[in-house]
Amino acid sequence: MLLKKFQPKGTISLKWGECHMLTNLNISNNKISGAIPPQLGKAIQLQQLDLSSNHLIGKIPKELGMLPLLFKLLLGNNKLSGSIPLELGNLSNLEILDLASNNLSGPIPKQLGNFWKLWSLNLSENRFVDSIPDEIGKMHHLRSLDLSQNMLTGEMPPLLGELQNLETLNLSHNGLSGTIPHTFDDLISLTVADISYNQLEGPLPNIKAFAPFEAFKNNKGLCGNNVTHLKPCSASRKKANKFSILIIILLIVSSLLFLFAFVIGIFFLFQKLRKRKTKSPEADVEDLFAIWGHDGELLYEHIIQGTDNFSSKQCIGTGGYGTVYKAELPTGRVVAVKKLHSSQDGDMADLKAFKSEIHALTQIRHRSIVKLYGFSLFAENSFLVYEFMEKGSLRNILRNDEEAEKLDWIVRLNVVKGVAKALSYMHHDCSPPIIHRDISSNNVLLDSEYEAHVSDFGTARLLKSDSSNWTSFAGTFGYTAPELAYSMKVDNKTDVYSFGVVTLEVIMGRHPGELISSLLSSASSSSTSPSTAGHFLLNDVIDQRPSPPVNQVAKEVEVAVKLAFACLRVNPQSRPTMQQVYYREETHSVPVEMTEGKCDVLATFGTYFCLKGPSSSSQVGY
Figure 1 (tube, rainbow, N blue to C red):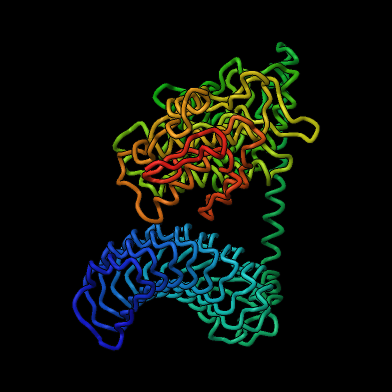
Figure 2 (cartoon, rainbow, N blue to C red):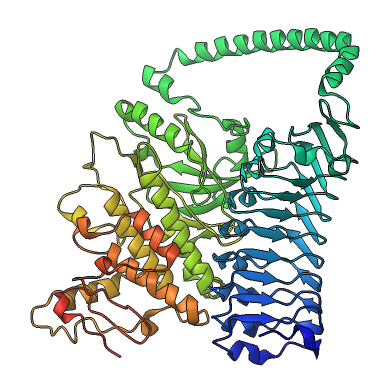
């Protein structure tokens, strides 16, 4: 629908949302005023939306994130304000996004990294603050990027230098500082660049796009060899020679201070060793901080002070393996400290293996996994130090009606995807693979933006190539796979089962144990007719506290439920892998082989399937 040439005035009609077959809406370059109606999010067939160059005000409706087919969104040259809604990150098919020349503010959301098909991004002439998110560097199809004339600060992300298809780059008129990453030397496709009017310094990338003076003028201290208007980088080093005497003096003084500190350290070390003579050899092994944070903050004394010596006032949770405390370090960083119960410290024979596993877990770098900073094995206090999650556990949120209501269906689906992504990474991208063994809603934590992070590796094990199972029980009652009752074998399919339980808990708002037991019982009963076994409508069991899901979101909820029941199959070998689950969550599809012959339950809103039984009984009820 093109209304461009008629130059209409007034506001955008709410009835556009009722046009369910509308694919293209272009009313740019007119005199349209007022706010963008949220009802546009109901036009689910919409593929192109152009409202640019009008007089629109207010915020960008989060409901626009419910348009699954949208590939072009142009809202530039208006008077829109507020921040970019996080829900826009759901537009996985978006190819062009133009929000330029508005009054938008706040940080650029990292959810924009979900636009993996995007090839043009223009956020110029707004009031965005903070640093450029690394996630923009993951848009590998990006050809044009314009973030100019904002209030961005910090350094340029090195990942921007990995955008091999980038042709145009404009970061001018911001407050960017530091040096330009060396990865920019590899941007062979870049033809036009503008980094002028920033606070950048150091060498200029040696590519033609940065050669014109207008591309780099008015910065702090750029240098470049054979570049007009810039001093050679070698000249900067010669300039430093003028201060060589001062540098030598500083080096001498620093060396003396280091020597003095070394002597003092040796003195205190001998004092400590003398005190330890009365201790057993086993205490010597335990009485040390096994691993340190990369920034040196995680000192034992700081943890003790930050938790007020593990005071109950600082306690934020209790589990089967320890008590969790909140601790603020002297630098202001807040961490979560899990003090292990005395029975979990382990025998000395297992200490070396335990350290090895924790060392490996600290190397994990994944946005959906809570960062483990380090651990202490002091005899008095053994604890693990984790990244702090502001919103707490998923279980506590679902038990709180007020908090659960804030957890709308888009957020809940993102929680499920986040857990799936984390487990897929642990099972298939880590070497050796890591089995969590205790996936539950209590071990899924949410940050300030309600993004899910998998936590608590107190029972995790690294799956070596020569060992596929362990004989010690682990997990939380209600989430463990049924085969553990008789075999005690643990592999990645036990995590898959637990994930299925957590998914249903997110959808239902409560633990699904009663539903699972009822369906399994009715489906396995030989006296129960296939047409009446397990008759449960999805409408009846989903959490009623948030507004019900509609349109594309409802379809994604149905996919999540189907995948959950595929994960809950009694036979571990018939369960999908987490890699398959995460892929299906992203593509919103479930292949026939995941439901064939199993007659999975709760297939759609208003329909039901039995949970188990021959394919001939796969009747749908309405």
